[in-house]
Length: 110
Image 1 (cartoon, one colour):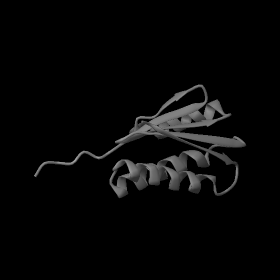
Image 2 (tube, one colour):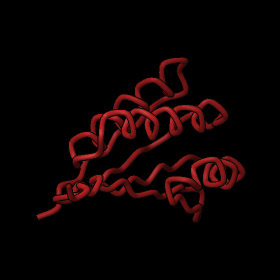
Image 3 (spheres, one colour):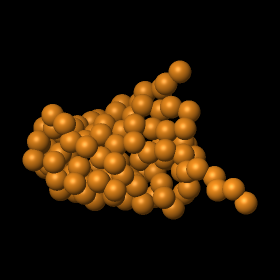
Image 4 (cartoon, helix red, strand yellow):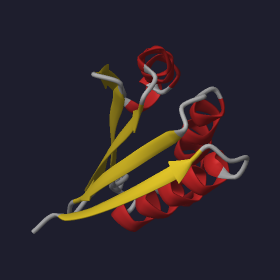
């Protein structure tokens, strides 16, 4: 069974930091290594710094080994720019939203 989490963030100086911590925690919860999770969170925070929309909504669908994040803002120009900045995470822009997935880091055999 998938679990869903939604977070609405108003345009305050703390918005990027709150998003960073949320993304990092969710990524670690799926099994990503902490450094990779922190880098993903930092990338999302950097993308949100450029967003001037009054409200940003982050929806997360938590699965057993992954999380799918959808970040929506009333700024379609931002979503295209953010998707390009988050391309290394597999992000895609659609209808003013950016969607990306974070997965458990596969373990290497010894």
